[in-house]
Length: 528
Image 1 (tube, rainbow, N blue to C red):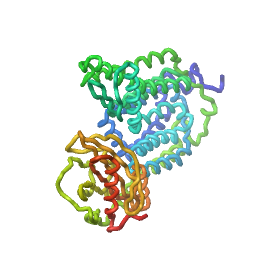
Image 2 (spheres, rainbow, N blue to C red):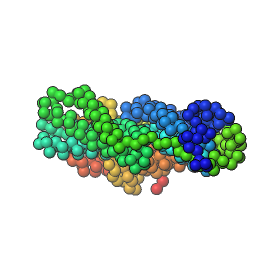
Image 3 (cartoon, one colour):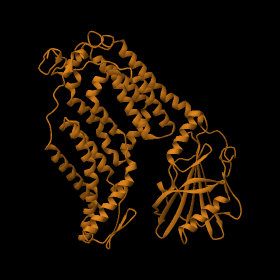
Image 4 (cartoon, rainbow, N blue to C red):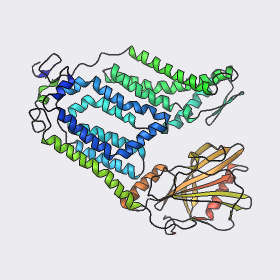
């Protein structure tokens, strides 16, 4: 057709020599402009990016993230001829969207929610491309650009559901195989051995790496969206079911061989080989429906003849493109400076009561009889620990303060169970308690060490409000910093050994709270 650019049209914008075409005229200046604006974002949000890379380095679950950037570049290169032939046309709708995304990053930063910050930064980089190069080009780059979201280390919330599914799958598979087994929480009891479905055995690493690999495979092998979607769904289902089969096979092999095989390091090796086998089978099946590579898309002449306000005659960026890039850069630079200002403004300066907890009779503070249990907190500004007794009842209290000057991870004692004995979290959930004459929500955990069971209640105080919800803690801290109020967090934890039954221990903890008073800044009680 006369008004379209085809593969065979030698006078078209699409050339076999992609680099040669970039050098033609001033089109290379678009790349420089895009790289300059992207570099501004990378420098401005460098702390968020450092957190991402630190997570990749210290967690084997997210080690695959190191491959995301090289794969992104490769995916762009594969479709280079579909992209290089298009004429950039800046899109100003990206500017208000950048404003929204920088605000989301700011809220995530003030609330110390890493995943929100990281998703916001990746989104900002994508919107920069859209703002400078325009909608038509971004449509051609959509798949590789969206692939960048795999650089965000997300998915840890799936660990527990995956552990539950793996334990359920294994126990049913063993029952069908006539192997006597009992499942208790994440522990599988056999006559000859005991197995635990730990976080490392949940299959989260297998699932995430499979999803990344399946996404790349579907992009390279298929053209139609429904085929890509089906294969990506298969890349989710296969590792979940495959991990169940892997765990079942390892336990069954150990049972059959009287624990001579598939124990110790062997079960990791066998499991890894099985995971590779699942991926190979999935790709071999997927190759059966592969399609030819998508041909170079024909570009309508009206796009080639776009307004000269955005592009000069030699193909270099016009005033509109530089305006869009400059405005985007200003929006990006403002957010980190504003975050620093709000953090400094909300840092706690008021004094705290010493001690921050007062307890009335008949409870009395006591010193010895160490239980070997103590929660682990990371970097608190202040910590107070004390044990109290009333007749035969004993309660251990731990109170820590994060002033708001530095970041914190709102953990619970079950996250860092402790330093002297091998405590294991057996169950956790939420319940209610009466504190200061009003009912609040607390996180209730049941921990065990050998023959000792312990009930632990944990909750937080943030800017006059009690809560047990970690998301609520982050929200309240962000809100306090935006409003210029103190963003201090006090974490309160009570623990008591279970002597006869759990209900008696809960009564003991609640009876202690009747006689306890938790003080905040300037010695004031939390507001109702």
